[in-house]
Image (tube, rainbow, N blue to C red; front, side):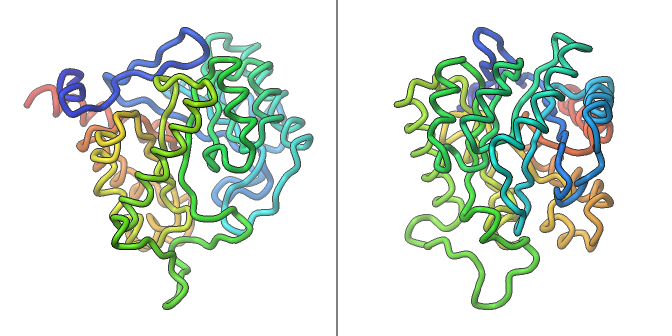
Length: 304
């Protein structure tokens, strides 16, 4: 499988936290740990530092490879959270997890350089920026200075101007020009430019992962088109691609499930499709379910 990924032009490892590497010869799981009161699926679930640390350790015990900590919801319509409050929410959890499990790989989900810097100083090794450095290019400065891994995502507009993928009405759906390659071409081009900007700021290419931003300013149909082309996008860019479909509204629209926490089976369907297309990095809410899924898929692939 590793040889096949190399032949297809996909990166097979991710450089994180200085000289550390995360091998992608198998599926890797980035577990969502939201310390927010208003996230779309699990807002308010973790009401204290202690609860967040316990949950994070549980995700690791279930087979998670990375813990992605976020102190600001990025759901459509979410209220923005200033840097100081994000730091107050996130940093004690980073410290608490690493005190219990010193080898844990922690990621900070933020668009602000001040938050990223505080989390990295506390021990985080990855920065996950849904604005791809457009909201605060200080993110690139922190990533370059500390040698962290960096996730760059495409989004059409910030949370306050966005709506859920299944709620676009006729005439107000997001536009992606056909002459620019439609949603796949536009997103690929955007990510290529943001990767170049990060490299110009001193971030090593091997440290960068790209995320097409499923659900962010895309209709259900546009999300499906991106899903079908995830592997190809990674091959065209020559980079690791992150699959982040977990429990999102377009998944609910496809499987007829309204409650986000009940979209586990629909999410597994998307993850399986991505796995068969060569994707090996996943941001998910349901760790154990994905560990079992990838175990089965890896066994099937190995015995073919």
